[in-house]
Amino acid sequence: MSFLVLLATVLANLFPLYGALYLGWNAFSLLTLFWLEDGAILLFHLPRLLLTASVTPEERLYRRRLIYLSMMGLACLTAVHGFALFYLFAIDRVAGAPTLELPPRQDLLWFLLLLVVSHAVAFVLDFLGEREYRQTSLTFQALLPLPRVLVLATALVLGGLVARADGGLRSLVVLVFGKTLLDLVLRALEQARRPRGAALTRAGYTRPS
Image: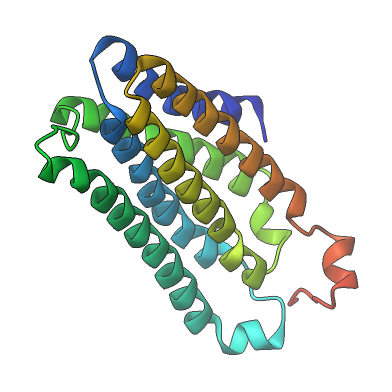
């Protein structure tokens, strides 16, 4: 992971911290912004799949099906994450607490822009610049983001429940920094797990000529 990718990731994750410190955002507002990152991951997952070569006969035969299943699986995780988020915080809404307040539209657009730029930088510098699409298999690429999204979603929902129960600014700051650190660790693990060169050969993958 290059320095620019690291910087873009940190900046995108710290924007919600500004909202919590200076704009009065609550836990639901922060978690809604973080949930939007699932959509950014989904958006850039498709071109990664389309550019990654099918390196086994099975992958070439079932390429379209594999891409479809990977996108559907990631979309389902995103939907479940969103449903869990809104359902858990809707409990307080029934009781009359204003926990479902979203950030202003302008702030949402700025955060979406930061998210897209952050993931675009990673896509251009790492995936295209380092030619990761030539160093991995389609099967591995199809499964790569699923554990990250699942772990992030679980951690954010649990952290959000703690922040909601505490209700203090300190818990929101801890939530933002915890999510940022977890995001960086999961990105680094993705890079470490990616099979390259000889590892593909040992696994039985052969590049088409």
